[in-house]
Image 1: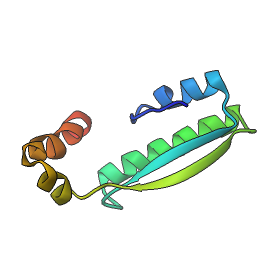
Image 2: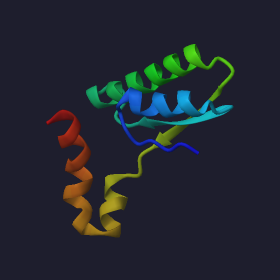
Image 3: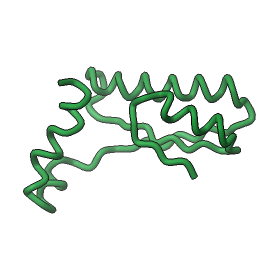
Length: 95
């Protein structure tokens, strides 16, 4: 199993090309369709699919649409997570 949580295409594609799996399961992040963030994830997904398909045409790529849990339910479980939930990814990607 190869597990990657990143928007860096090479960090997903490189291990896939090295290990040459028969199947690749990609979890496609969907949030705020049409937003700049949504475009980033969509572009990342499309680029990974393009590169893997070009290099490993025999690899079956399976898409799993991933709907983010709501911030409200996440914070309700532990209110201390509010800052982490709202800022960590956005600050890293979008300053």
